[in-house]
Amino acid sequence: MSKKVLVVDDDPYILMSLEFLMKKSGYGVMVARNGQEAMELLKELPALVILDIMMPDVDGYEICKHIKSTPALIETKVVFLSAKSSEADIKKGLALGASLYITKPFSTRELTKQIKTLLD
Image 1 (cartoon, rainbow, N blue to C red):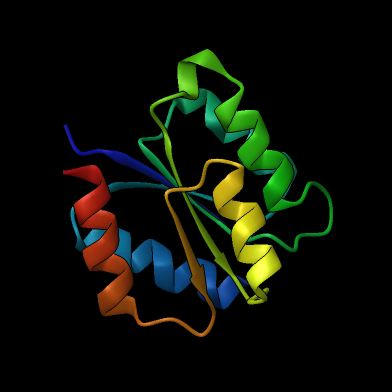
Image 2 (cartoon, helix red, strand yellow):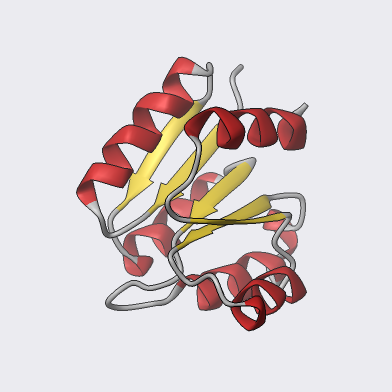
């Protein structure tokens, strides 16, 4: 069975391209357009979550905290993908337990490679 990846971003173009990219890489993909949808889809226990930080309802930091404090999701890897690129933002993301923090704009090839490394 292919590993499940949850992509969370409020930008429809990024959502679509990441969904395509992850499917092409052989993962089962779920998409959430906001934090609320993401919280619902976490019940499906994805292996990895690609997470935007700035979203209208629940921000990525809150979702990451939820993942890291939920026993059933403790093995779930979190990859922040954000336009927030200050050192403080990156440190905060990693301190919350993210495996990776990638700033936008990003290289799809690099992202795919890093995700494969995390999930293998």
